[in-house]
Length: 147
Ligand SMILES: [Ca+2]
Ligand SMILES: [Ca+2]
View (tube, rainbow, N blue to C red):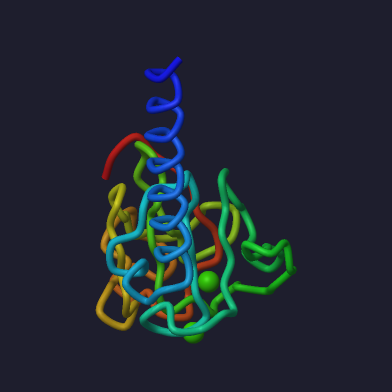
């Protein structure tokens, strides 16, 4: 009986510690530089993810005109994203210059973060937007096994 009580207490302590870690990680800016994977790819309106206005996706999206943030609020991110982050569990993400996964693209590996898309270019695929700066030009994305 005594053993069970101790076990229960220890479990409660662990649960509190985990809850504290999650709560402190979610809203802090530190979470942006070292985010835990949650299966989503994120895009923000401004650089450095410094803006509440964002979208996130679990799957692919052929047209960023309609997307939703983590509160389920609808946004238009087409040709507007200035920072992106891959919080997927295992896949990389291709970001395309055009809707429908067309045009040139840039690839972001799992766990990576581009805080300022003015520093990134569409270096892959060729076609529309090839070699251009990624900032304010992404229109669709697709998960891929690797970059
Ligand atoms: Ca922008
Ligand atoms: Ca575009």
